[in-house]
Image 1: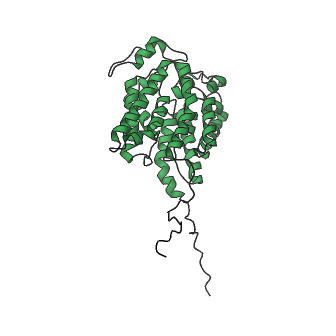
Image 2: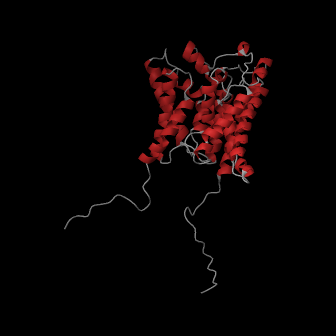
Image 3: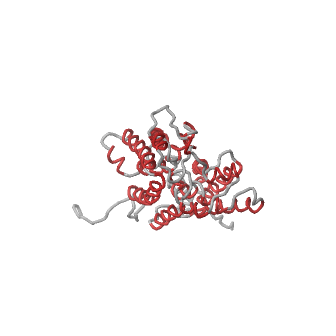
Length: 341
């Protein structure tokens, strides 16, 4: 009848929606990174604040600059730029100059997200795009490490170095556990790796805190558990094989698991839902590929670390993996040939 309100709502699928949206997921990841960030500040002091602040500022400023008119505040409010800057800052050394960290944030959002069409369209993890840019542009600065507890004026002078000038940090540089193992054959106690009492990037402060953050995100269902599980399992298996064959030459699997940026990359980088596969079998292949590449680069590559390159390479393979393991649409099974009469 005309004018009759039936109360029915016509809507396209999906009809059952979860309570989490993009800002909520981003906010959960940021909260999971708070203890790791505080540990970085505890170990490296104000230098950690300066580096992370520079990276976050670069990401947020670039996000706001390229956002459509009238939506600049809304674009920044979804926490994606904040999260990208925080992750980028945690991959940098404590003595990194602020202006370089800011440029890394600009590259992370500009080259890692904006050029692909914005949030949800990027092929590569934006934070790792920013770090790859910095690795190529400033290889010396990004491989200059400070020991734990270093609060010398030389570190702050390096942070505050003006563009195109080098700060005097030679007196306080040291080697990371991966560098010591690869180039000197010297190991690091496992407990030091667990609590983060080692030189390295700001996000390598504590494998234990990273795992606790991952457990929090797992309870929030913020990522696919198969990705970090597959990466860590692949690293343990391949590193374990190499160690069993030549224990005097190659490090133990637990050293490989606890050192470098593996934990941070496996839990917070590789799990980006936009740049990782969708089908379960594709996820396992993606994760195993990252783990195998990490071991390959660390043991036989020219660099002591390989997490960044492993994740970016498998990000590039994600569209191919999705195409190969595309789920069958509901109601469209295999065609069965009818028996001829």
